[in-house]
Length: 214
Image 1 (tube, rainbow, N blue to C red):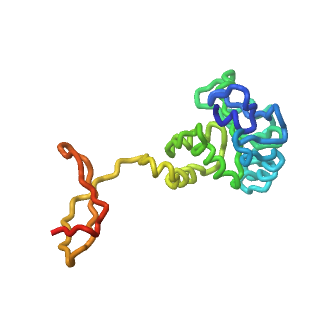
Image 2: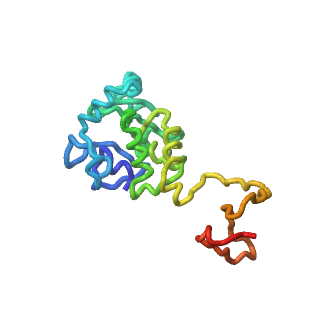
Image 3: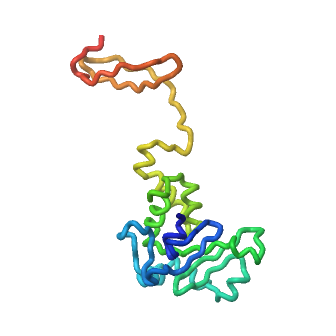
């Protein structure tokens, strides 16, 4: 199930990034389903349109909207469908007859930016992808101006990604530094050790204040 199946779409029908189509839900035309299993993520179409009309960035883009007849002739444009502003985008090299390659993106107002990023990153089928993959996944179905920086901040602050450990680059090793001489008995020493080559195990004693290192 892709994002096109859960937002402004028939969630019972098939969906794929190449054939992404934004269309009203067949069950209730007044409800937009962002995630079908979480009722708190449902919102009314009327509310979404109101937020689009209040967002300065969306209003600026809506001034460039073209009629449907003109939108069919160009590779990239903005146009309104049932009162919702969409962005049409055709990949470079796609001919006019290859309508299945055209992507229709919902222009998202700022108030829903974090919800959309969370939908593409946190939901059970999202997979907690990295910055680039989450960004490209959003662009398959949604358009948010200057969203990449927000995606980067969101992914870098994701608790689960930090807990599992998914660095997007190799962390350089720091040079070994000599330990300072202990000035008093019962001083607490903390060492980070890792397995390497012939090292088999490290003995760890949690009773740190019952042993004296001499």
